[in-house]
Image 1 (tube, helix red, strand yellow):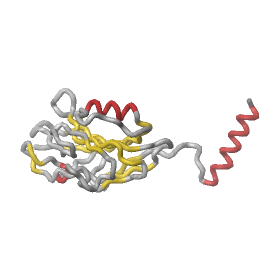
Image 2: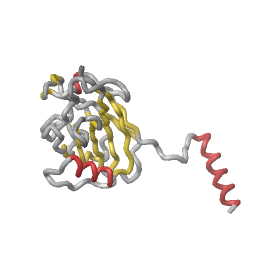
Image 3: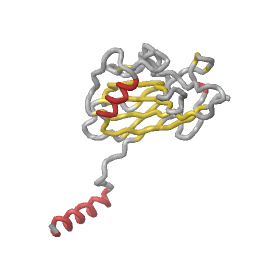
Image 4: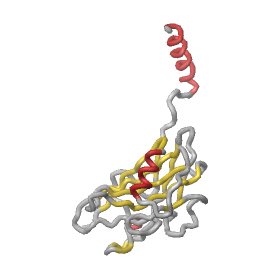
Length: 187
């Protein structure tokens, strides 16, 4: 056993100067439109319910998906909504495994820019699309968790899948995830 351990340490130490890492790549999410801990722009605000934003889903890019990734899912969730169960702003499942980014506004209803095979789930506004931030006026800062999941399989969901069912299936089949938690407040 001692020889095996010594041999493994020697092997790893020989690889280190070559830039080879024994650790897997980290799954990361980035965006040109939103940032962790920062207020989102009016572009990501809902247009309705007293809000007057552009209702555009943010640009998202991801890298470092783990081996075995078959598809991706994107979720956008506000845990601070005064509902007792949060608010699903966006859920997209079955994004092909060779896709590593989506453009600003890709979450529009009947989107032609989401990758073929992607499925948008009905959000808590009642639309199968992105629905922007619209916290109640004077309710303070809300957190918006944009998460990309690397999935072990494509999801088979009923046509009327709820946000909770979709969230359950995404989490049950997630190999890795990465989140940007952006903020929004209406005074």
